Image (cartoon, rainbow, N blue to C red):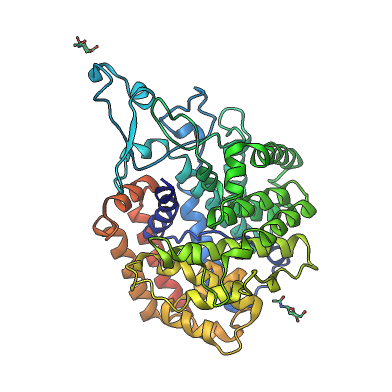
Length: 477
Ligand SMILES: *[C@@H]1O[C@H](CO)[C@@H](O)[C@H](O)[C@H]1NC(C)=O
Ligand SMILES: *[C@@H]1O[C@H](CO)[C@@H](O)[C@H](O)[C@H]1NC(C)=O
């Protein structure tokens, strides 16, 4: 069960990438950097990409917990719900199955695990995928607005409307708890799992956006909305700090623990409790972090998993996010210099992860997950020997038009000239098209296919983005 839950969020990322947009595992973007708006000229391509992603994502919204077909055990659709994906009903001992409604099957038939077999009905309760899209739509639309240095524009109106619909409007709001996240169905189930807390890891993206709207004095983000959001987050923080399944997740030793602290610290920033945020990340760096990195930079708990390349990158993104939040909440923090009990640190963990090829462990689909981490580490510790830029030039030749390049500054200041040539961009665009069209024949087979439907892979937006990438390439040269 543990494994299945890890997969769902990573497969969501892969599917979003196939739809022409990469979903970063996690990130926190310093709102002061964005609001100041002093972006180096070589980030123009990244800004254009962000604006295109914002438009593409906005066309798919709004999102609400009311969109799902399944109903949580409370009978209240406002309650967040997601189902454990590899479990199937066995109604053989439950009498007249033809007379059972779907809802009765979910509650009366025992559910049994079929390893690696994704139950497609999980799609009908897509709060998880909807929240992920929401968090990214809100973030990219907020960034796209911030570039314009105006009090409001269509992007910020979208971001604010999406926030209002998911969190605040009476008719569509989510109840501030995850009681039914990654819920087991059947007569003995009907309760959420601790691992389901990971479903809302995108709260760091939402926090980044809200802080940018607030500090950038966006006129769509009214005092009423801000107060409503603060109240929602205070209630949800209470749940994260007291509910049994949340506390179990807080003590998870691996990436689940790391992401729990991402989420809680981000929420503290939303409720204007910077000290509280730094306390939360401090607890992580004195806690789980201590045993997550070996002296040589290996992350033993992640390396032991079925997809070691992915899990190293995944936990790194969460570690970096915790460090980013701490440094923002407490500028005098020396968090980037913190070492684990065996003397490892974030930079060592990245350097070690870079030694592995995704292809070697049959994880080619996950290769891009490491790239934002490389830029993030390079922007903090520098790139004295040029190893980080060299890696990205080889692995992700268009990296300077990727959104992560914008907020990972200063990184590779001379890279303005390294923008992809029209030819490279065109071949990347055609690779994107291919991966979209061929997503059902991926190695990851049925799970991947099921999840790309879950996310709603969108061929036309891929085409639009590909054309856009082409035109960026042509304009640059
Ligand atoms: C099973 O349920 C159906 C639909 O309610 C009903 O028509 C049928 O007679 C039932 N069969 C048995 C054996 O109870
Ligand atoms: C780590 O600590 C040293 C010494 O205090 C300091 O010069 C350096 O900037 C710190 N590194 C980071 C990444 O904060």
